[in-house]
Length: 278
Image (cartoon, rainbow, N blue to C red; front, side, top):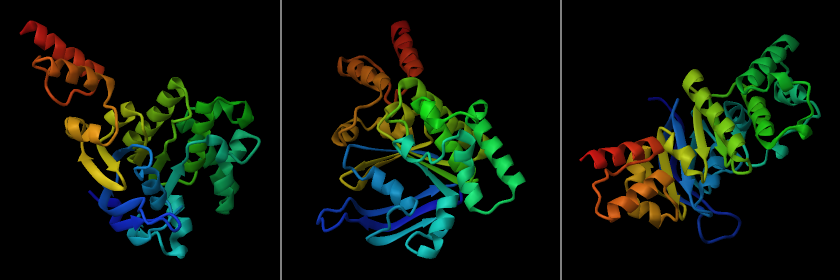
């Protein structure tokens, strides 16, 4: 699999701090992967995402996004076009008083022809289910709808990678499901790489790969089943496993023969049914 992100011996310090926010990170993310990045507050997960998008540059080591060195100022604009970033608060990313004008903002700055801008705006709004709201004022939208418009604004740049930095943390459960579903659809239908930095375990369960950070270092890296099966290390990281995993673990602690790696409600139900039949 071709890589789209690479960290080579990356460490990052904020200001004059003697404690690194990230320490000697070595990893690659392949094109088309859906990766969830988890970690307790202060683990370095948001710093990791910002390094991918040139919001920050490494103190030590190198980060390459789409083959470009993020510390080279000449690459910043192109990197941000190819790897779009969605932040926690959508209000901080909306710049216009009409939805379609907001989505058109970045393509207009590219100096694209009017017809191309129109195509990109319409396709991006349709992709996130907000086309019918194109004439609305963003201030009157729900949090989930605002975040969908923010995603459309990134899609209008036609990126290869979508970095979501706690993008659902301020949303209600409905908005969270909507935004997560859009991210998965973009990954599945367009082959877009998605990096989901989150503290919601349900979002990690549906990823292709989970990276867990602790104190600025990679503690775990694998499929959701591989990662969440390592119960002691998950607890060591300060994370709470998905609820079905918690139930399965509790039953296993009581001596019931429940398999490791239970992640979803369906898997938990199946395991309990098998136990009862046995």
